[in-house]
Image 1: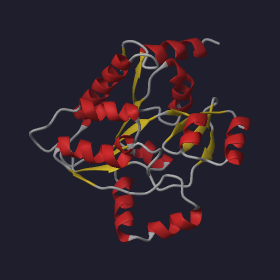
Image 2 (image 1 turned 45 degrees about the vertical axis):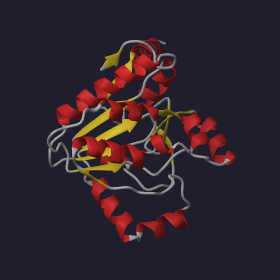
Image 3 (image 1 turned 180 degrees about the vertical axis):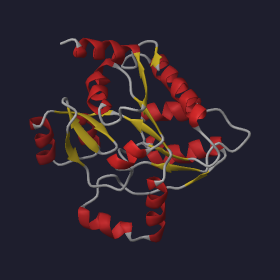
Image 4 (image 1 turned 60 degrees about the vertical axis):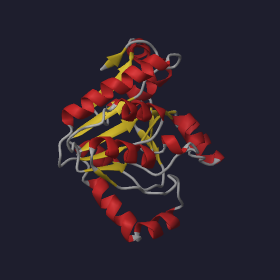
Length: 232
């Protein structure tokens, strides 16, 4: 699906992307399905575009990862709760930062509520996935300078669900966090990937190999730049 315009400089384009992604979601939603959603402003547009339903459209909505950044309204937890309200479904929340030490991560996995949420995540039928620029996301996740330097040296261009990809579509780094892993992304019945703007073109191309059967929602800015990059 391709929205008109370039969301790098057009809020209208971003809103149309949200409407297209909401349409794709509702076409694949069902009463017994589990939906996992990442955070970010693009995903917030999707949630905003979903209408209030009159019948149950999902069994449960879950955050796909922990929290990133400081804006509560853009966190995966918040968006999962808002989407669940519109779809008349149950939801789970993580209440955890996305970037944890390995020791703390293992401790948190022992918490019964966290363990239950993780188990529900593994059974997600639909994944709503945002794609980010690798170095911008590393900064938002507050990765240390050594890791950021490694990402630059490895040519990382994209981030999706905690995985960092280079332009050859190889995974060059994975954050230590609780959330959907790559195998679960590939096994989901429906993956809706949403990102737009010409600055995201290289990032979208980098993740396309790992999510080749997904539904991609983007805009003209990203689409035209992808054609340009593919023709190099």
